[in-house]
Amino acid sequence: MITIDQVSKWYGSAQVLKRCTTGVAKGEVVVVCGPSGSGKSTLIKCVNGLEPFQEGAITVDGIAVGDRKTNLSKLRARIGMVFQHFELFPHLTVMRNLELAQIRVLGRSAGESAERGMRLLDRVGLREHAQKYPGQLSGGQQQRVAIARALAMDPIAMLFDEPTSALDPEMINEVLDVMVALAQDGMTMMVVTHEMGFARRVAQRVVFMDRGEIVEDAPTADFFGRPHSERAQTFLSKILQH
Amino acid sequence: MFADFDFDVIIRSLPYLFYDGMTFTLTLTVLATIGGIVFGTLLALMRLSGIAPLALLAAGYVNLMRSVPLVLMIFWFYFLVPYIGQWMTGASRPIQVGAFVSSLVTFTLFEAAYFGEIMRAGIQSIPRGQVAAAQALGMTYPQTMGYIVLPQAFRNMVPVLLTQTIILFQDTSLVYVLSITDFLGAASKVAQRDGRLVEMYLFAAAVYFVISFAASQGVRWLQARTAIAR
Image (cartoon, each protein chain N blue to C red):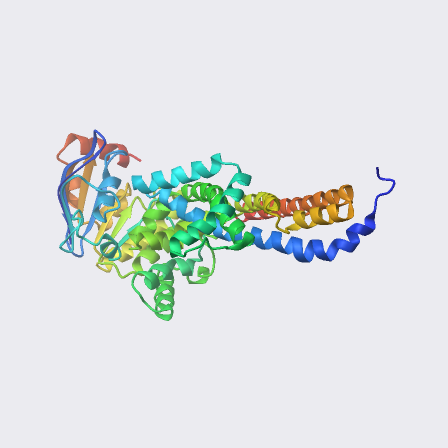
């Protein structure tokens, strides 16, 4: 579904991604982790072309992201993305947040968009908040709306960029529950996160990044059981000690 | 000086001052504001486009407009617009457009420089993540701007835009140099006809003050209200 092949990226002279190669198969859940500044967020933003890269190739459903001839807007409409800071549109109600791109990008009718939006709000347990503005919701609720907004587009894959890092601890689980349910439904997911419990439960593979490189790319059990690299061992011991 | 202050001249000329004068002043203010915001937003988008020739063109325009006195622009356009019209339509004579159209064009073009800078600040105040979220949903550049960025930028900037409109309202009095009957022009004509300069100019000043001050208070109230809403 998603292939990432020898991707390198520079900001000026600083190289932030070094020949990264990995992928996500259809129906697979891959967790990307690593210390901050390791390039994991940058890598996931390259997948739907929000960040350009200079070398290598990324394809989604066979379409080359870096190709100048690719209609990026069209491709992005088929890939859901959830951001660290939710990025709901604050001037629109929850319902309008869910409808807007369905109507303007997919060309769905108002009725169909509203119905689909409502169904997804129901799924994330926020039906009664449809007419509120994002500012009236808690962080956890906003992030669930953001997931519903992405799902409303019927994406072929979902990208999560640290979806719980900006949340208060008591709100993390309500978001993770939605993500777990999504994974169990067979959604193709690439998830940048520090939530190792989530990785253990639903990820088929874990990709560990450090300083712009993919250091480990292993099945979940192997990654947690016997990480090969010293860097991954150090990272795990730091993050799992409590 | 106030011993023979004649209130009656003010009362007698009220219909003329307001029906003729103030109507013109307000019409010009409203239309130039709308035109200035539309054209100014275009300038802001050009400056932020990242396309060097467009950005330079818009920046040059803004700097030019901000470096030339408004009165000069009013004169200049009044005499120039007929010739531009002639050149554009290929007519044999300069096209007379009238003082109103000429001053509307002038104010729109002039104010666009200021409104444009306000809109630019407004657009830049929208977090980059909002653009990324819109793009991630498959929205194109015009959709991202039209549905996500500009509505928020405009809303954040309403108080500043209104403050600029109040300045514009006062500046429209400069059209009196074209002998147009705006509010000040009307007051001025009565003043000279009846020899009542003190009364008329004091009254005109009071009217400008009351309207501008009331509008400023309105903007402050609006600002306080939106601050709570956010």
